[in-house]
Image 1 (cartoon, rainbow, N blue to C red):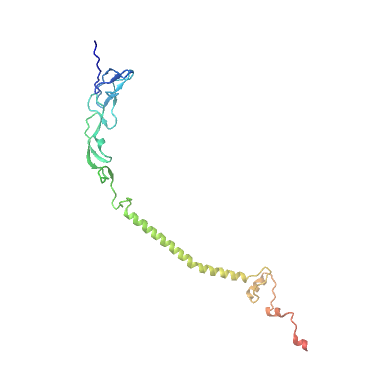
Image 2 (tube, helix red, strand yellow; image 1 turned 30 degrees about the vertical axis):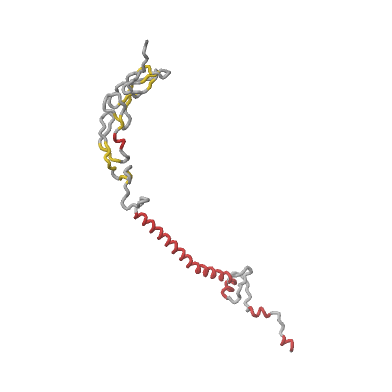
Length: 226
């Protein structure tokens, strides 16, 4: 009579080989890898019949292995530091890890209120909310005030110049009214200067006063009574 027993593998130094039913058939040994490398697949992995075993691969960045063993590469202690925190020591893939977190932020950074991260240190004179220097804010305000004042002055000057432009337009209109009309006659016969100008242009103008022209055609009642 044979006693049945379950095969148990040492997952720290062996692989687990199972058949199609999930039964452990054997426990192949892992390969001890040199410093700076780790077993691949990792020891304790469940493998198949055709898997390639007993291989090593280099440690990833920020991981190390300082001994020849079956262990996977270990993470460097500096990975526990927050971003922009000062780190002391070094961590190389094939050497012991000497890195550590100092608890101090790098230059230009400070701890936030709950000391969970190193944040940029505000510049001197910066406002609390926007980070913009106070001098810049004051300069912007002064620039806006000066611009508004210039606009107001230009508007006032423009309004003050409008009456003069109206006077100039009226003077031009009077000159046009005293000019010769389409027939070559002045609109005001008493304006001798305009009449002479029209004569110089070759236009004929009656020099008799307007009052005589207006009495033509009337009958002298005194002569009729005689």
